[in-house]
Amino acid sequence: MALATVQADETARVKDANSFIVGLYEHPTRKAEGLTRARLHADVAHGALADAGLSLGDVDGYFCAADAPGLGALAMGEYLGLNNLRYADSTETGGSSYLFHVQHAMDAIRAGHCNVALITMADNQMGERRPFGLTGPDVGSSPDIAFGGLIPTPLYSMVAARHMYEYGTTSEQLAWIKVAASHHAQHNPHALLRNVVTVDDVLASPLVCDPLHRLDCCVMTDGGGAVIVAREEIARTLGRPLVRVRGSGCAVGHRNGGRFDLTSTAGVRSANEAFREAGIERADIKYASLYDSFTITVLVQIEDIGFCEKGKGGAFVSDGNLISGVGKLPFNTDGGGLCSNHPGNRGGMTKLLEAARQIRGTSHPAVQVPNCDLALAHGTGGAIGAHHGSSTIILERM
Figure 1 (cartoon, rainbow, N blue to C red):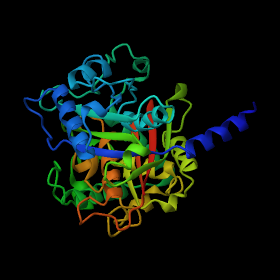
Figure 2: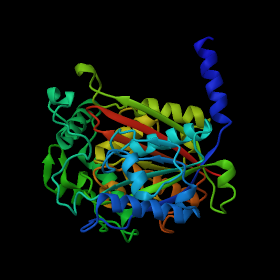
Figure 3: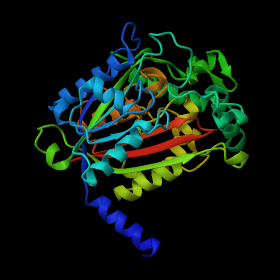
Figure 4: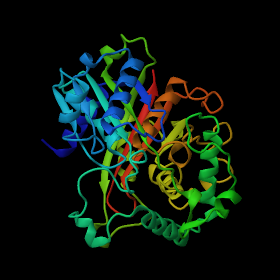
């Protein structure tokens, strides 16, 4: 069979299958002293199940990443008491893992391997006072050591510097991203940083690694979150708001031996796939949850997803264009990783949660986007400027 025919058949199969996010929960803690990682995973799992009106016995698919202790889904399946599991997935792509999991859960549901999929993320790095580092397998033997390792701030600073050189982007423009996040965080009682800041405040904060300032960087927190993805027939019986996963895309990028563009990510491919599957345009999106480990992360993603042309991101994010009720593209209305929550250095789950809240209409009234029928969540795991996973999820209100 010709490749084009196979791809056309796959598109038809995807469009005929519907999966829904039926439960969600974000842990309120930002410093989990006295709480183990396993306990945090259990807390968010129970919270999401209660939100969906389901029980542990209803779950037959479980998804986690390297933040889960022990042997991932095996250890957590036992700890949680998931006695009816017939599908498990421990895909690890850093902070984007949980958006990858949504796509994998959709595939598993479509294939008949499970009906109700639980996805959890949690960490207690701050409570345990562990040194900074991505949770997961030992990185000492990782091949990226030959390229200087995976130390986030210098990598992102290098990306920012290159973007400034190539396109004339300024520190003031990057600062507007933090300003927008802070305007939203003031309404979130659980946000770690709730004070509204100005462009001058960002520029006056100490340089961490030129050209990025302290306020260009995300917070470090504990906590986590969980979502439940279910088959349509089940979703329609729960009496909950119907949040359909309309499109998804995943991709992996890396340094390719030095032959790569610092200012671009695999998000170009993941976004194209998600919009192709969803059958909509970028202009149809009412709200975007964008991974915000640093301000430059947001700017690059806005360009790569296609909300503006490459090199035009600086102008796009300026003058409050990302502030709900003010700008063209409201983003991270919970305060995001820049101000609210970035548990275990993994921000993808919280992006998914706020996008689902916007579709449900349950974000804080001060930042709720009116008539939010289409929202996007995008995750970047690892680090741009190095190996990374990109995942794009488009959610629709039914």
